[in-house]
Image (cartoon, rainbow, N blue to C red):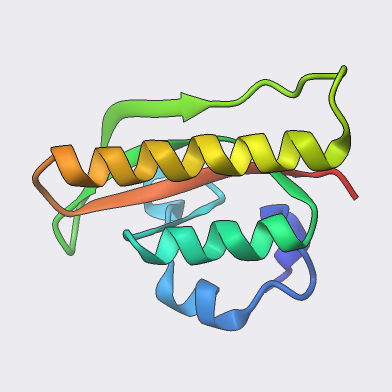
Length: 118
């Protein structure tokens, strides 16, 4: 698999790909992860200078994936440094994911939209 086609760094751990759920079955060339593994993915991406532009929440019953239409987004602020934008995007994602996981019942997957700022 070519990690570039998923807009992931070349050194993206295979562990994350192996534990992630491919979204090709719903027409997306992407992966999603369960909580709290998605937080580990975000930590890795932060170290690699990726900004978390947002993400989608998907309902997953082990076989079927459905869109919940819940999501979050982050707008890059050109007046901030690269590092500040990355930190703020990670903080927003972390807060959203933790709160969503605490306040909703069900098995959820979290798909991330990311961009390298390296």
